[in-house]
Image 1 (cartoon, rainbow, N blue to C red):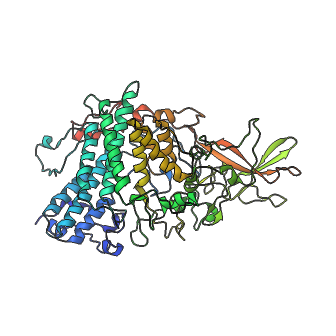
Image 2: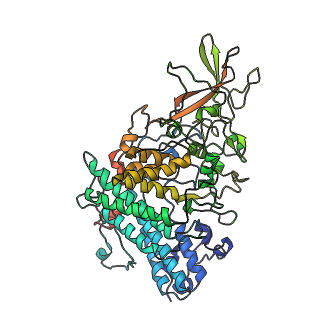
Image 3: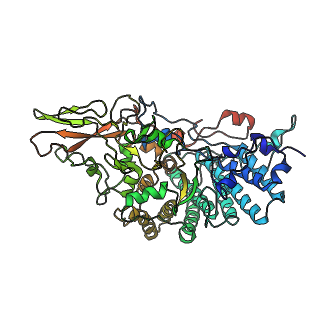
Length: 615
């Protein structure tokens, strides 16, 4: 009886990082911590589930709400408020790189044992096989996003013995098209093995999760085939490990549209609209509230108590005025993101802070500056004086005092008042100091900020989930694919479903810029922005490294109380648009960043792995 290679990592249930398979107590009831034999694992239904649960806990890559929010500050979504400035300018050659053949090997070992076990009913074996193969396809997809084509080993499990010829173990890289084709084909196959999602925990893969991965992989491949080849010097390797032929684009768009339409027309999910009279709250709940959720198709889920995998995102980022522990205000959304949300009557989302003559525009309440904005903004960002848990979040950088015909800016420590009892600078900020725990951007996170009592305490933290696939993505994939295939009427119909839920004006035509804009605001903080700009080959244009660039430089918005006794504007509010003081450099994405570099250690072990462009 041999010991299982699966078990070299020890099958620790609590290390899995996902919630229940059936009921929470059922799934988490066994916690083996010893190396076990194949027979012990595959002779026990609970142990088989435990191993599969472990794999779910190992597929968390890219941006997420798992930590303090630092990953969101790397791009153009948020800025770091904790302490002094960041030093980000360019991007690492390994940023969000995935290379996990250990996991692929473990899944292949699991599939071997699963297919031979008699401890499970045939129906359960089929579902578990579908889930394992889905997680393997998800792993390949995440490798492809950053690296391009990589070796595809199928179901092979390689066992190395000292002195053996390793050339048989050295697979070459697939083409970039080949790895996307593999993911798409696997998703087609496993969608027939998985349940339809009815009464299914959103932490587990089902048929619609598989079809969402198919749709996403196909739309990525289509856009790479399309837009990479429109560059003055397309990025490619001679063997096709990087670079998909342009003539493949239409086929991928057709596959993406078909898969997305299947989800839209036949799945149990929908664009959640439980609160049509409060579209901001509706959007927040569609992303951040699990109960009776109709929107989220697959998520990295967490439970409390029991899993030991809560997130401290709320603890680290809650406004100081609402904090329940010593932590707060690590990061905040930046003005760049806020202004990409349209007004209901104007697609230009720039906040109206100056009139045509360059004079301040005055507001009775700082929140009034954001009136008639896309409802998704209020569900994504806490705006100045907006409520959180029923209590306004006061953001005031200081006072603007009218003095001898000019404005004088007065600031203070947090919550200090002037002689007349008027607030100078709020405890929440914003300010431009290096002081920790005080906001520096003028905004706080709303999306993924947990409203549950004690969710912002170190002892508890939050069981907030992180959606990976949701129904709105199916709709916007369909819009994009239809637009690229010249089906304007269909594209308009799809994109307007999402815009209608946001309460903004419908479009009469759809362009690539519309798709980029819509995905920017719909999926803020959901690990889409970086990959979208890469696949559209826009990243080097948006993050161009130019000082004071409207897209590469980070900006903040500071509200001020007006002190002008005897005038009609006394007691009102104005805003200053400022370069974000905690980010010294504009973001600079170079052509080499479109693909992660291949680690030379991988090539030393396998000379068949060719390097990526610019290495």
